[in-house]
Length: 357
Image 1 (spheres, rainbow, N blue to C red):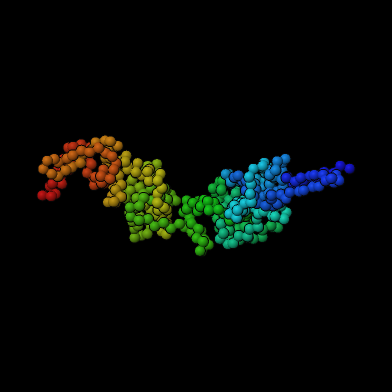
Image 2 (tube, rainbow, N blue to C red):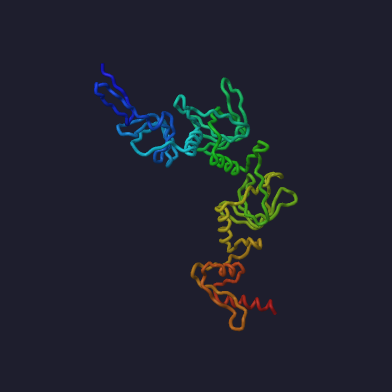
């Protein structure tokens, strides 16, 4: 009867003088279940593979370039070694982030058993959707357990819901990036999560004089330059305001949505600020953040353009310079001492001399 003997790579078979078969089996470099590093892969070693010494199969493989885990893996003879403690920890951390854990006995990945606490921000996944939610607790629903949450955000739809429940499909704690997506969605809705009180609260933004804010009272949206709240606590005064299409109004009183709700929700973002600045520019105006006033738009030279500035001496009342956008240029611009023509600069010098007299 034919019998096949499987040997480890590197083993030898010889015959002695009496024609007895002598097998010298080489111990494998790695054992079943070892965590090894091979080029840019971290692999759970399974068994030798291939005809060349050093080839092997893996149970699961982490590609360090793509940070992705795949089942199996076939590797040819190339330098490999036992993974360091840091590499092994990183491998298991990535597994944990996918909601799995390695079982060294069964040699399989198993779902990570995760028990959230009240207020934990968790990753939820079922066959239909992925969400990040703020866990509240559980309740019995028919024959299954349902999860109650304070708020949840669909990671693909970005739909935000409050105080409801869903299937018990929580996988793990949310990553920092997933948490930030939820916090950003809450902020956009004028809300914030308070981990101390375990409540979704109104986002309290207190604007200061001169700040450019996004205003929304439920009836309209505006970009405003805030001045102050009135004593009634129901309205505020602004230096100016425009809608999101750039329609501009002068300083006015804007009603709050409710007496307790500050309808100036937050500081305006870069795009919103630009809408306001462009609207002012079409009227030949600009916002002076230092003096906190709306003033005529300053002329600003472009690079290498000649400008004139006033002088107070016996020889000349004006001089010229080429704009380089350096410290001296911007110092003169800030002091309103830059002019298109020499005549304008001389006129400004005359006003300065009159003040000195």
